[in-house]
Length: 252
Image (tube, rainbow, N blue to C red; front, side, top):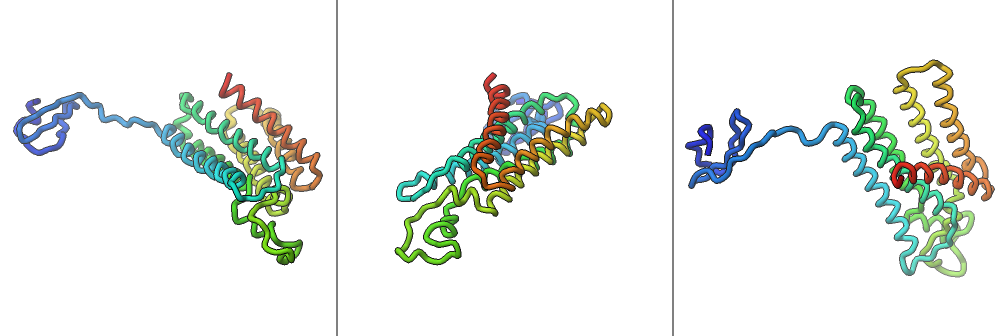
């Protein structure tokens, strides 16, 4: 038992200037150990913890939607397009979350911790909403099952519980929100990139903007057309790009 803590009989640890913690009990001190009492996590580590929670919520929402689709007694008219976009959103979320760890290795990122935090938070909030919109919620069946074009009740009797994935995917509201959010995600990446652009003239800035504008244009195609082949081309191109990037960054 150290001299600074001698004579104290309460049941708690007492910190003295030497940076040591002494445990004093009624019967005396039983332990004295070194302690630095430093912060175990930096600001960026707290950021990774926060975005990990958002990622978990988004992937949980996506998994719950899949669970509802495969639940026994639930009738589903399957369609590959919403499932393909769900895989795309899953890969995008995992990839961006994984790349967030690379920020911890940046030696000079601390000076811009505020903008960095806000930009990453915005990215993952948008991706969370994309996960939520990728597949239908269980209550979406009320708008698609057992009703006609004007919402009239099916004269054959009550319909089975279920969902039409094709009707869900091609609904105007779904396409506007889902692909609008993806376009917003690309725009957020572009704006953040321009704000953190340290050197180079207008030509270099333009070269960094053009690929993102191309992604925005491609992502807008499913909003403008109902042609299935066009939707498949878009999801194949974007899914291939993100999948290849995920393999390089995570597996290789």
